[in-house]
Image (cartoon, rainbow, N blue to C red):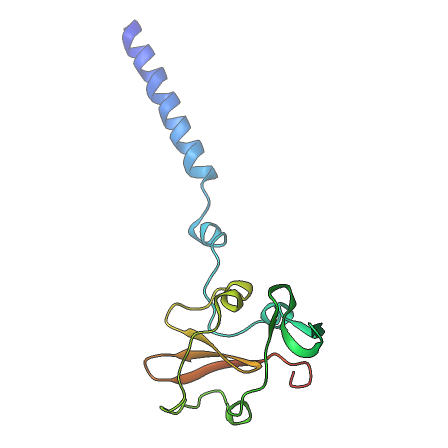
Length: 141
């Protein structure tokens, strides 16, 4: 009988520990909150990550990444870019520079971040559709 009481005490302690573990475990919503969610649009933080109105060497720069000595010049296609449009086949979809991708928020894996001059674009590479645009120059914002 003495052994039975000891075994019940061990089983009770194990159940208590299991209950405490389950009670303090985060819910799935709380657990997901720690992981960044990929975005399908640019954010204000993306816009703020770029430098404006600085001098690179002896040349004034409207927008770029001063710490990496990158200055972005306007591209002829920029005025024609619109959300929802299909990028013409003769315009290459070249991924934005690695440093640009690093300083912006995580984007959805099915989208490609492309830079056209002073504009960032999120493009679906399969359909070539512009999902979102971010004009980086202060005058275009």
